[in-house]
Amino acid sequence: MTWYELEILALDSSISTFYPISLQNRSDENAGFDVFCSTDVSVEKTVQFIPFGIAARLIKVVSSEHGDVKTDSHFLLMPRSSIYKSGLVMANSTGVIDKSYRGELKAPVWSMTEASTTKKGERLFQIVAPDMGWIRHVHLVDSLPETERGAGGFGSTGK
Image (tube, rainbow, N blue to C red; front, side, top):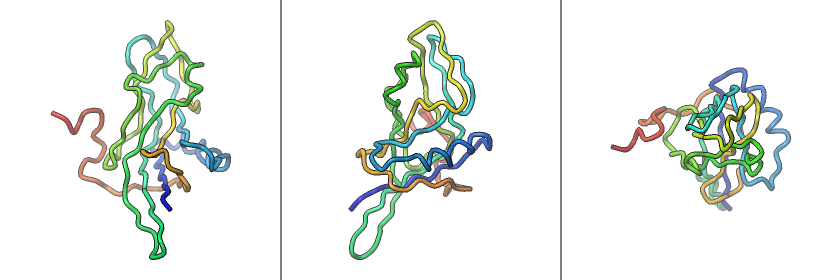
């Protein structure tokens, strides 16, 4: 049996209050885990970033009769189906988050209307396992293991 664990590190203490409620109301049938906007952002027809105030680590767990084998996994940041109500479009359609990335999660978006505003605490995006697998456990953590890449994001590994 294969499943996933998600570790969430709150980089903004005010955003951490949203996650205990999210953990309690989570269904085993959900394909993704919702993330919260960490601040109000006014978005126009040019690309802007919505910050989430968190870093995250996804761990793939393969269970067998000999025990669990855990390995870090990349994951996807995808729009929730209800994002259409906001007038926003994710600029890169799907965010592929490398397993070594430890920086703040954020989404590049643009507005289909003249201007859209996201509100702190709003859920527009979700973390999804790469194979749409079950994210069985979600934990708030005090730290994440360091990696060589660290917090470098959005093209930092390319030339």
